[in-house]
Image 1 (cartoon, rainbow over the protein chains, first blue to last red):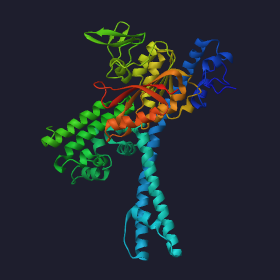
Image 2 (image 1 turned 90 degrees about the vertical axis):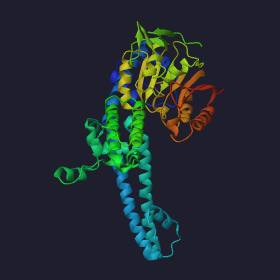
Image 3 (image 1 turned 90 degrees about the horizontal axis):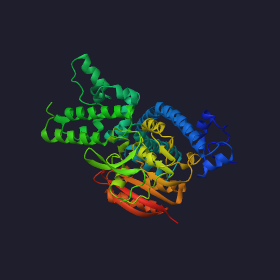
Image 4 (image 1 turned 135 degrees about the vertical axis):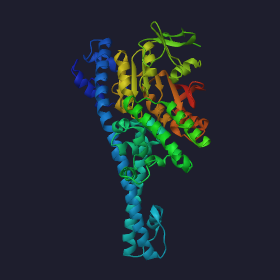
Amino acid sequence: MTDGWFAGVESGDEAAAAERIRTGRADGPEAWPQQAVDAGFASDEDDYYDQLHAATMTATRAAVAERETADDKQLVHAIRAMADCERTANELAERVAEWAGSRYGESGSGVDFARDVVEREPVDEGDVALQSLAERTVAVADEADDLRTYIEQTAPAVAPNLSALAGPVLAARLVSLAGGLESLAKQPSGTVQVLGAEDALFAHLRGGAPSPKHGIIFTHEYVSGTRPEERGSAARALAGKLSIAARVDHYSGDLRPDLEAELDERIERIRTRGGDGE
Amino acid sequence: MSLPDGVSRHDFDGTTSIATRGHPEYGERTDGEWRRWDPHRSKLGAMLELGMETGLTADQTTLYLGAAAGTTVSHVADFGGPTYAVEFAPRPTRDLLDVAERRSNLFPLLKDARKPETYAHVVEPVDVLVQDVATRGQGRVATLNRQFLADDGYLLAAIKARSEDVTADPEDVFDEVLADIDAAYDVVATERLTPYHDDHLGVVARPER
């Protein structure tokens, strides 16, 4: 019995063949064309390759359609889960610090302090309870790190240009805030610029408050690392390129290294000339 | 330098460049049935243009890892035999499907090059393994896919320094990836792909006996 993609498939049954292409497995390559002819699946080598072409086209077209609708949603779940884990770990770490302060009479803070607490030798039941909480705190923080690694691996596949310009994590945050890559691609760059600053934006729209210069893209070094009076220009330039990147990612998907070079150059000009001259 | 049959130097309005015969796919210049194989758009094209000895000949069976939108693999299928194109990202694969639609010897596969067991039931042993994957662990991808390559075959890889570590010196990154490749292959030649591609290393290797 062969592991080849044609195993158990009627010659000419394209749908069944495509399914086997998508889900089949083998330990290693074998002389599949010869095996298929020997098994009577194909009349000769040409017929084999014709059937393989039809099956791979059908299989890959279906797989692309499925992945395209699903991948950015997976990224959104992952980035939201990472934010939940980070926030929860920090809250629990505060609780651990407060509790530990009451028992050991010393203060520390953060997840690192919780890691410290885990390492100690328990003296009584109270120590055991506190350490158990500290262990879970550390585990949640570690989960956030694992999710970050997962996002760093998957975001470049979902949005290659956006990830190249923004970094995978910020790219994922933008996709999440917009509700998906398609909606991000359809938003004007002025909206991308203030994504994540909705409170400030609505305060401005109600009147009185100044318009926000940047939302979540503030975390990008090109905004936060630019001196305050030029940050608006930097944020506008960055948002412009990010929104082009999101459109390329959604509509074509090929990597355009030029975008990164253009952005680098523009930020350089803003930082050195003290304005973008628009 | 020796070009494979089916690949030829051709003059396009004053620019001499390598070219293949086939349907144009990415806005490259054409002249009759010839279309320019733009070395700025294709790392394998750059390796040929730079005169690296690739061992490519007409009608070879090829496994291409990291086919992306099909720019390079379209040329490979123009002069090669059965050509298996593996790509992991769905969006460029949409374009790859158009390229494959017009080439009956090009078989597109939406698969992860780090998981060869998911396409070993489709891909037969090949004469040439081309690798252009922009992922961390490029040396490992080459090693994992060694099983597809005939003993007298060639690995043609374009190693991207920035995929491994954007902050490290590219030379250090190349040394590390080459050390990985060395575990399963004998490296025959390496060459930087400048001026066509910055921070890329072209590698020609044969399976270790």
